[in-house]
Structure formats: structure tokens, C-alpha cells
Length: 407
Image (tube, rainbow, N blue to C red; front, side, top):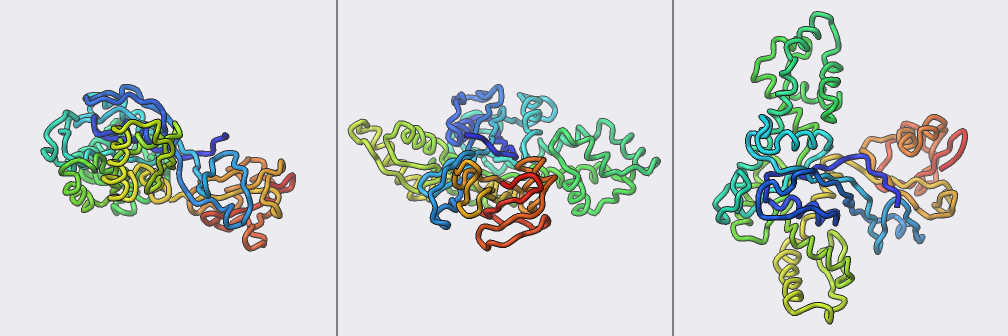
């Protein structure tokens, strides 16, 4: 299966919150899991999936997916994820595995912060009595660590950068973009942060320490959007802490990563019928399961699925891509009549693209040559031509006409 992901999701948090369990449950990639800090020494990379209804049922055709999967009318679109080393207070100054964590987080376009909702791990990631630690402190400390890390990068040559921008009338936005380019921070992010803070981009030498901190904190929120995964939701004290977390200015997903991992492994062995994100499952081969295994599965059904609607793992991935990153799905085809490519495969590909992508930009995503020779596109639903500047919509199916070929 070919892959077509373009945004990277970072799974972050302090040690021992179930971060690597979440990553393994989302990707089925091997990751060392243990109840002690710094189990993850090197970042793990894997492929998860965004779950979305497939359009083939709407068009009443049988599809032949190439760059994704289709299971019972559900398209699973591959996305890349990284599980980075656990973060502890003072990481931006190099404490713990801070330097390694921050080196990995720079590549992420959005962050999924795994929080121990049970309050059973202290600020260092050490086990404590459930309910003893306030998970709100974990959110605040992670915000500060990332903000201070970016501040430390800018401060290295802030005086020179700000003076040069004023004295030589250079574009301050471009200079900042170049300085922060390694952090996946774009010019649009910088514009928006300055607009929100109301700081004077023409006079950066007048910015105080507080101004710089406010700017960077705003820039962090824009360039590294984050959602909170309230993990271990099945443990005591978790529900009360979930309500506290929901009062924060974040999307919060209740989650039991351990349950999702158990279900996916059972489904992989064809013991149960379960797809990531389902609200229930069916046991297929009870004779292959012990009574204790059946009891464990039934416990997951009652305490997690029926109570919360899902384990939360798939919800978090979908929320990250569709809400934080504002992505949509678009299906390119060559043969509009049969919704197929040149090999006759029906609806073979689906692309995740940012909301606001126009028809020509989409053509460039498929192939540079196709974008350069773009003439027009055809909308499969309305059977009409659309121009290069037409903004695409979620679940669009389009055929692109070019000077050289169609796709």
C-alpha cells in the first residue's frame, strides 16, 4: 500500500502516562512499555489511520483502494506518528531527556498530549496513589517547556535579529521564519501570533522580555496545536479529573489506550471482529479464548466501550487531523464515468489535504507536472468543470484535466 500522509502527529507527555501504549495501540508498531520513567529512549515511528466514511457507497460502486484501506464502508487513511521520549520539568534546560524530546517535537505538526487522568503518576512520571497528583499541572508544565524551548532558540541572537530588521529595513517576518524553519513554524503562524498579541513588528527592539514570552506562547499554540488525551479513564479518580481537564482551553478525549491495544491485538489474531474506533466488538472464536481472556474482554466492553462510546484512541487521531490541522479528504480519479484510474481501479486513492486547498494546488500534491499543466478539474458529483482557484470540499471526488494527461 502506498502512503500519502503529509502531516506528522507527535505523541507527547511525561513518562509513565501510557504514551507508548497509546502509540502501540494506534499503530501496532512495537514500542517498549513499562511502569518506570524514560522507557522510551529513542522516538518510535509508526503509521496510524484517520477513519472516515468512504464515498464508494454514495456512488454505489465497489472500490479498489491503493493508498489506503476500506473496511465495510470505512476508509482508513494512513498518517505518520511519532512517540517521543517522556518530558519532565526543566526539559528545555536539558533535564532528563529534554534535548532529545525537543529535537523530535520540532518535526510534529500537531501534538497529542497523553495525560494520566487517574492522577496516579507524579510530575516526574513516578507511580503514586491514584488521585494524588493533579493532571492539570502536567498540561501547564508541558506548555511552559515548549514555550521556553522556543524562547531559548530565539534569544540566542534576538538582539542581532531585531536590530538588523530595523536598521536594514529587512522583512522581520521572513527573518523569524528562517530562524524557526527547523521547528515547522511557517510565516502564516508568525503573522497570526503577532496579530493576536498586537506587538509592533516594525520595532522588535522595543519588545520586552514579557512581550517575547507572550509572542512565543501564542506562536506555540498556533504552530503546534494540541489536544489532551485523558488516559487511564477506567481507573479511580479519572472521571473527576476529566471534568477538571475539560475546563481548559483544549479538546479533551477520554481514553483507555490499554483497552484499545488489547482489542487490536485480539482482532489481529482474528479472535474478535473490531475496527479502530468501533463502539463495540464481537467475539469470533470463543473456543480459542480462556475464561479469563473472555472476562477481560467483557470488562473492556462494559467499563470502556459502553461507557465512553470508544476507547478514545481513534477519536484522538481523527480529532488531531480533522480539527487541529483542519484536514479534508479528496479522491482523485482519471476516468470520471467509472471513478477509476488508468488501470481501472475504482477510487484507488484518497488524500488528506488542508482545508482551503484549491484544485490546482491539489494537482501539484499529486504530481508537479500535473499542477504545471493544469487546465481544469471535473467534479464527479455535479458533473461540472471547476477552475483552478476552486476550493475543494471534504469527500470531493475530482478528475483533473491537464495539457499532458488526465488523472
